[in-house]
Length: 284
Image (tube, rainbow, N blue to C red; front, side, top):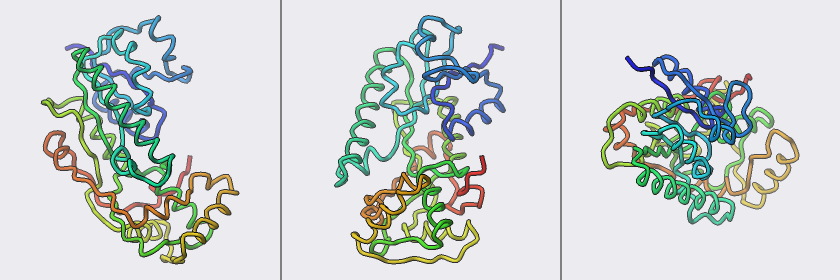
């Protein structure tokens, strides 16, 4: 029986942390690649001139718009299947009032299109996974940021009613989908949405973060200008650099997506949003 090998780009992410465990359990020999190399990884720049043997299966967890820079690496190692992580932000942020959000959507779209063009020309099977808001391990930039605010101030500011729909997806469910996308037969379908099982309002999502922290939900409803002031004050603390005023605007906009195709083709079976304390607090 031939050895199962997989090349992993961007494995230092928290999705990569969980995926590595699954790959090891499945008996894969993992070769990790990173920009600088070291810590058990191979430098992306050196890898193109210093091959480490044939690797037919690949997973890229780095930003998908950086992947076109490394397709020569994939070709050099005989890539036959590639799983690349993107995001539903390519859809939800295309018309955002924030220029940064719109640029992110553009980068994701361009990255997906360029990788798809390469895969077709290289006869490489490509599966693009587009998760919604990923949470878990206290290492995400969404749920954990909310949890940090609650822990610091004891309440959470709410703009409007917070009625926008959300489907947070757990990091372990995303990692499992990556593994499945490596293994199961796929047809002409190139991309799959990965959303959480449960559709809930932004306010309810935050309420459950309060519960995970063992706190009683406490909201302070405020106008946009006051929310912006609270964000600016919070940004003075190093732990809250990720908070933005655009968060308030998005609180009342739906960001829900259908994961049926991933369920049928990849066996994707996400959990409802019932986070534990360990999901919203970083203990590393």
